Length: 369
Image 1 (cartoon, rainbow, N blue to C red):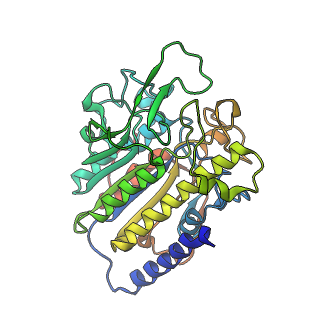
Image 2: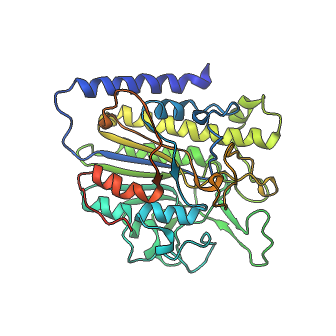
Image 3: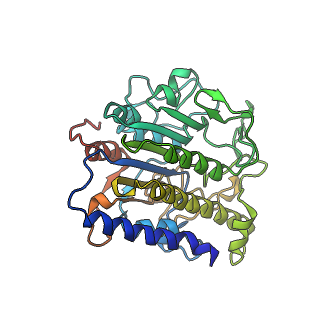
């Protein structure tokens, strides 16, 4: 029963917010708070709102089933291209970032002339905060998040880190490259974090996101970008990691690695519930737009720690088949004033988020390409 405790709260809170917002004669006139939660390498069949019989994701299900489920939604095939497309509203080929991911210490980055989503929202008076994965370059400080429109940043620069000690080891599993890089990749602003170790990364990032919400001045609109490490693999020595209590919930999964992966998904789902509850406790939900998305399809190659599932889609991360680019996502908000949940089959691409959310924030004109 404890497993479903959070989802019971979530469903109750959703009902309360919808009823209270529709009961009011007027909706708040301030710009909406925008919360964007970005999962890493989450597959189409890794979540129960797409019918996965293995991994219950009750918090994600509750939000998807009371919002707009995006069933024809596409991103890019890899991390860096997707993140660049999300934050600029431009196709990666327009940015020179279409080929691969940015590797450790590579002198490449999202070009400085590109305006990010955070910079757009900051001009509209938003408080802008980022927690989690950047992966858009850091070879000069000017390329890092607090120089690209974010008031604060707590997270990591590279493509992945260990889930407990936050070290980055390059190359990742399966790539035999003679040039190696190893070091702690955890930063607060532009400074290294040296006194935090041992907390599971999904929990650490969730805690930071909750602190931002709890300390936020509600009179100012909030843009919070929470880009999780989950469910990406960590370092080669132990690519799949999750808290034992979460892993132990999945005894019905015979494969040990897939069972650990399920624990990682469960940690992600718990994070979504915790962030939602923090918004509820702060009385911000009635004026919030809540978005959830993966960056690309799941990794299924077991030789490099991939135990995701994109069934019934063909392909995986790295591929331009649907398993690599058609991804789970939804949008939830009382401001939508939905009379019933919707499953949208309208074609959508990750570049659409910037003009869509910018419009929702009160501006209606932006050039997305």
